[in-house]
Image 1 (cartoon, protein in one colour):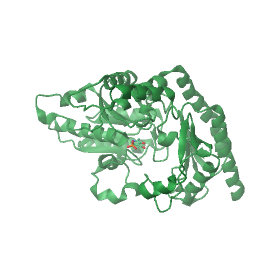
Image 2: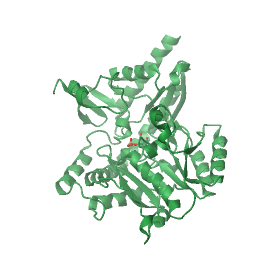
Image 3: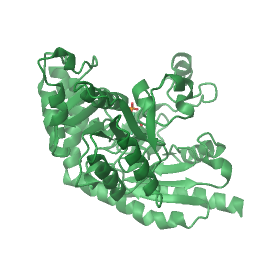
Image 4: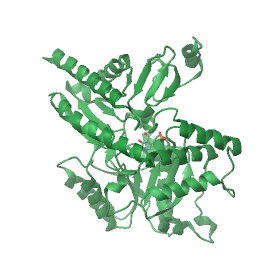
Length: 432
Ligand SMILES: Cc1ncc(COP(=O)(O)O)c(C=O)c1O
């Protein structure tokens, strides 16, 4: 291995979400295997966050690797306007097979942000194509939908997008439906929809990821969707993080059986973390609003790599692994592990909001008031503490969360649990 890799990296690369002046410690990874990231010195780091929530089947899964290699020998990429290919069609069929049954069309893009861009553009143009004056979007406070301008606009205003606030379009926000305060959210939803100009309502179903894995119950989602039924508004479930088994079902939207969102955004776990891919699915009535002899009603959106055949092949393989009964058992085992871990966490006075949904576990570590900012010093200390024990955990401010690959072993889960308890006991001793 090249000893100067970090030096060469720092000379040439600008990393995401990183203050390059303050973060010069990069960790070269030479190999991945199941839940492990393997360093040059052979250390095996447990990836407890599925590398930014994408590697649902762990690293270097041989079935997905083979699917990509086989496809690469046949066809790597073809323009997707006027052409098609087997992996794109097979993937659309496979997705529609697991998506809510009212969904009938798949639009391909490259990542989570573009899947969201497509969704919000579809909602806005849906009404434009009908000459209706509905041109505003509605989101939930604290939302994170991505880093492109449309996606930033429907996300919460905060430190990450502060430099661009003046360039983001206006959005109505509902208060987050906190337990016991859900009525405030429903009221705001009714008020906003009654006003008449809302074209689309975008939300992260059951779990707001980047806001700190903030969770709300399926009944709350059901109520919000029930209110939406009274109005003509396109409902958009951003399942970029929650999709593909993360919450215990294929999609978090499935926890509500009475209502299905009109549009669903997908990415992250879609290819098992192997290849970039975004998809946006919709119900037939949306597709029909664009289906016309009138060219001005066309959805003029597309990316160079739309429906890249290697991404599609990876995704078909990933979905088949997801459907496997062994994987379905893993999902249950992880959820069960979280359930039994929660009481241990609740024992600590300075631990709050201990919650889990499917394979996601989160809790707030609040030793003092300063801990609640994303930029608080505890965050870095927590990160370091776990990295020293070869566990990759990336707190969101003071929120520690686990979102592991589904194939993680019971032994690794126990290792993570012991390290978390060691950390909390150490803090308790300091505070006492
Ligand atoms: C709910 C949600 N939507 C959209 C995105 C953006 O996805 P990407 O980073 O692939 O652009 C994210 C990323 O974390 C997300 O959590």
